[in-house]
Image (cartoon, rainbow, N blue to C red):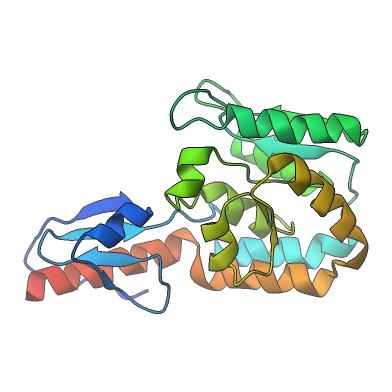
Length: 228
């Protein structure tokens, strides 16, 4: 990541999370990721979230993968809510599938949760499955959550009901738009998912989807705005 020159004139830019709505605007792709776009006229940068781990922390978990003890649970860390943009219906469908398959379903987190970052990481690292379940609105609009990047960087195969997320990972993760069937697909996939596949996904996140990458994107776009 390059540093800003001290003498650079100050400018303001607007950050927005990526959704397909950005495609209705005058946007241009910033680099090879099709979900990082900018509108120079409005000084707006659209981009997905990222993992909260730094690259060397991802490498540390990679080295530990062979010795990590997994429990039998599916674990979802994040907010579950109802309403127009909520995910409650999809979470309940996945939980129902877990119940039918006799897989414990653990959910923690949310806006009012006191779970720490380390507790979050530990819960995901030791789970058998770590889905990133989203509601209908988010899936239809292509919203890409931080959860998918976190779960993969913590050492998991990606599990999503969002087609945009599936495409972002070049269709190398588990995807089904039906949250109930997604659990069944994930269980079926366990026997043929290799550690090399998971490591490759972790490397992809490490190299492209950490906070360092997003900061670099912001600085790159800021230079463009200042030079325009």
